[in-house]
Image (tube, rainbow, N blue to C red; front, side, top):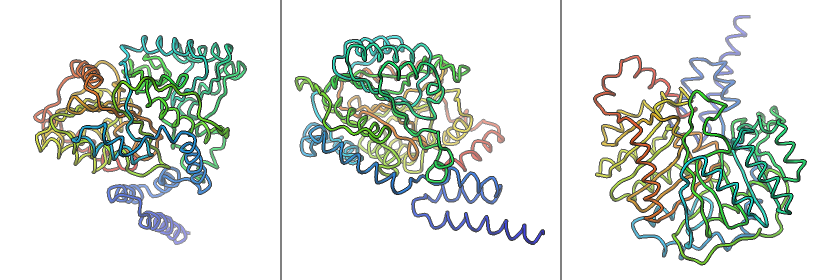
Length: 477
């Protein structure tokens, strides 16, 4: 019996080891991390690898994504912009960054955009509801987390009022992030009122999902498009800042901008892609679009995801860091960089760029918190500045560069956003809008305490060991 168990054990480890070795898409650190897990806890490690080890879709699902995006491009090709026009709009110093961003899913920078930074969560909700109440043609919304709290209920009721006026309303929510809403009476009320509903990556067939994909592949986007004229972009889900799912970390501190201009149409196209994949309904024409009078700044939408291109997001931020001339400020709640991004941050600091990083002091993920702090010494020694925000869970995902270029949206600087989640961001070049975002970043820093190298070097050995152990398996988190 013991011989059979030993043979079974060896076959299990060898099988999963060969599977890891044969894969060309794994980075060496990720491959090493899986070897560590499989050898330390072979049975648990094999089960975890089976459930979460590979970012993959069955072939039919991948073909469906590609076919739908081709249809979206056909319907809205004019709003993808052109390479020559996009280059003309961007300062030469930042052309490379925008060119790389455009390569991700084909959206090129288009001029004539305007943006307004929302002051606080109450204003964001008030303005969004007012815009929906003024809608005359359609409203499209997609959220990773949509709760039936005050914010979620007000948004749902605004959609129901719009439907009663004859406005077409389509609403999507992620099957995991919004699972409580999907079983609530509010969701049923929306359906009964005539709001067209869809669920991205539903959990109604978990076994099939496990066998053909990964259960933690998620649509993390936050998209609101109103009459093809207005879009909101930022880090906020449809939830109160008190975030009753994890109230002990509240308030959740987010950032949202209200946009008008051609970038609205690009966000519309991203929504259309997700809607057709999730609902099965196919648009036969581009919904109504109002792009304004052409006055404004250049911007483009970046829609990343596991069916787009691997490593696109860390490569994008690394390219942007190489474009920086003076300073870069980044805020993110979850910081688990890959080697590409980590080295780009250090390289920027080494060549004299002021690199400022702002993270939450208390993170809702103890794993991410430990992994993040394992990188502090390397970053500080390179010359980066690190601040830990103490006014709640800093959930804003922002990147500003040289007072000219900004990126914001749903993407965290962690491996989940890089490899597993569908994300949406807007990248722009505008001094006025970037100054507004920089001002908000300054408020975050004012509510933070600086982390200095001397303090990190004084951390007790067991804390450093713990952080580094978690970071070792970081590539598979």
